[in-house]
Image (cartoon, rainbow, N blue to C red; front, top):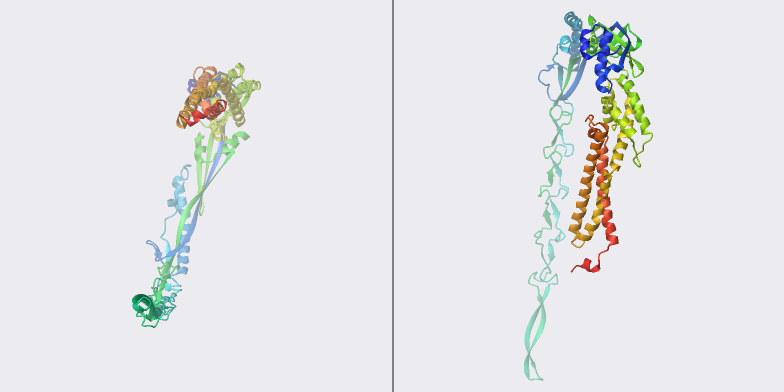
Length: 567
């Protein structure tokens, strides 16, 4: 029996036929095969009981905290730590005692509703935190303590003058006197005088110059004068303390006190306890009926919403204890199992629930596509990458493989190291092994087809740098700027010619592999990074070859000395 069209699903009551139709609706768009290639060999329909147990446990926790200053607003003040502990214990006991009744009340109203969950507000009424305040011991409530550096004096002995208020005058070495600036301490100065003397030999008066030592008027012959720096006092007022003998304490800035770090200057600390409530939830399933694989699939459901999503009917019973609510939901899940023949192989596929949700398509598309993949792998055996060599058999087998949407998706993801997302998206219609194998084969085939097509002629664009030779001879006498512009021009021409060659190759591959326009070969080439590899190769090749041609031209046709020196 083969799958009918999608429109027949609403007109048949046979669950096996309906499930086969659903399988065909999912598989047919992914392969080049129509649903006529799926044959229903047998079917079985059973109801399986799934028991889902939800456990909600109310948990209380008392959180203790402390900080500086007075109690925050809304906190109940108690006398001391003992009173706070007593009140916290009372709050916990009263809240726990109220849980049983509140859970029972909630269960009476919502216990038979599987999707309903008790909230904290259903089990607990928040209580005001309790706390007490203590005077800070180190500062005795003052918020400050005596400065440890100045011992609360606020001042320190001036270290510059050692508490004297003055320092010896360095100008006069504390003597009060300095050498006279006029006589340099010699007490006398030499003066020059003229006098007339009679020269008997010439019988005339002559003028002669003589030097005479006289007492220094600056120091009166003492050789020293009063020190101008200290005015003869031998000391100077200390520049640090200005004669006060003490300076302000650098640690407390003259106040004599420091902030108490224990209470951060508040003078007191508060201690607080607050009761909070949370609800922990656990979930587990058990299965009655069905085979082992069916039980394993249903047992793997990790939420009550998923269990109910596959249920045709359900009933729930809840019971409560001191702090726990347990709810058992028994769900009746219809399970249809069909044995499908595809590509000469058999697979058992299960549909769960009234909608016959398929959790695992058991490689049905892989069974249909495996022959196409084998042909492609065989064709690859007679091709190579270097030097590029492909044949029509490779093109034909690759085109056949790419005619299936599943293979196209696999090929577009073949360059990725993580295949998790695509494996999950296929829901088992192809296996992870098939995805890995097909991805590797298509990547290799597309790569070889691309480079082989490039080698047919477009790769000749890498000969464009040869035009640099005559250009080099023309512009060599025009200056370095012109030569550089010529080099860049040839490199850019070569690169853009490479870009055009890539588009030509992609267009030819589209005509060869998918002449009807689907899939888009350009997208597949991009996803496999072939575009990037070619453009990098074209760019590097254009630069290297152009520079090599320019250098070789310079070696073969060196410039004459007159050309180098210029006119």
